[in-house]
Image 1 (cartoon, rainbow, N blue to C red):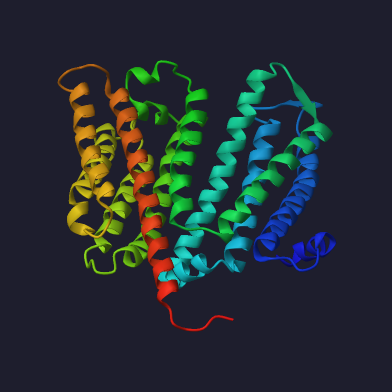
Image 2: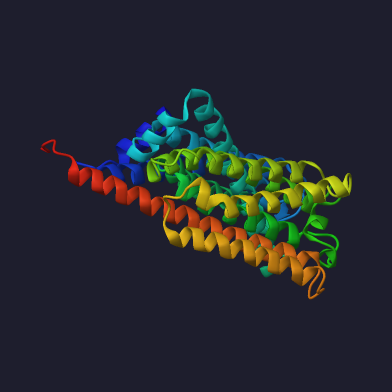
Amino acid sequence: MDVLRPVERLLATADLGARSRRELEAVAAALVGGLVAFVVGLVALAVMDGATHPLAGSRSVGTVAAALAAVAAGASFVGAYLRSTDPRHAATTQRLGGFVRVVAGGSLTVVAMGFAYIAVLTIALVFQEGFAGLELDAFGGAIAVAIASGAAAYLAHPLGEEIDTRVLGALVPAFLVVGVLFSMLTASDSSWWEVHFSELGAGGGISGLAFNGTLVISGLLVATMAAYLTHDLERAVPEGGRTVWVGRLLAAIGVLMMLTGIVRVDIAEWLHIGLAAGMVLVFLVLCAALPWLAPGLPRGVHAISTLMVAGTIFALLLWVPIGYYNFTGFEFAACGLIFVWLTTFLRSIAAVTDDRDADSARSDPSPHA
């Protein structure tokens, strides 16, 4: 990140606090990322066939912007992740161990790049629909590329600085929604929903690549989150010796999600469906066993977990044998329940951890300057 130091000196003000310094570094990363992307984008668009280019599609401004935004997001995230001085980030990464820390950092970098890539492609597609027929020349396209890359670098920087379980928990549903939305918008078969969600991943087109890639990267994110979650649970429920299994089960969900994306439905349908069903099964086991695995968590968490089990079973019955909706409807319901549970679960753990840290601080007899 030495390249950012001239920009930091240009923008620096006296007596910056920690949060002000982080914001300054994020702005510097955005400026550098946007400037580099403008130059590279200008050259890339200038050598493309044609004087003007569409916002989305093959050989478009959107494809160039997505690629450069992914690089900008990855570079910004890595720089912030390696230089982070956030106490929670430092404590968690030290607890993870060297190998897991490297794997987690690499996984999160891939997630940041994938998120930026899919998000920019989705935005470009939406703008193309809204501004039908609009095309940009190399200069105008380079400006759009610079804006997208600068925004990606700016948004990725605080993720690297303050990455924790809560941030990861928010990234999972956000990335899944963006990826699936893009796949839906680019699907060649508009009746995919009459079969199941996995129909979006069939074939080798952009829709299939986006859907399967979203599953793989989301699974990687969930598996990485499991490592952070295990550390948080040890702090939230120090008297519980079985909390490690919560992280293991969550990691299993992440691995199954990755395998579901790797094994395409049109190549091995039953294996693909079996892996997807395995995710739901492991989720039900986790919810049902949570009172035994982590008894020290608030009662509300266990109540929500019980409701999630009942809700998932009810959603399954609405599909088979009642037939109220098809398999796609069940997938919608199951995903919604999992996201609700995950959000509630992570917020509860964070609340318990913060309360314990506050109690420890109040009971600490050491003098403070």
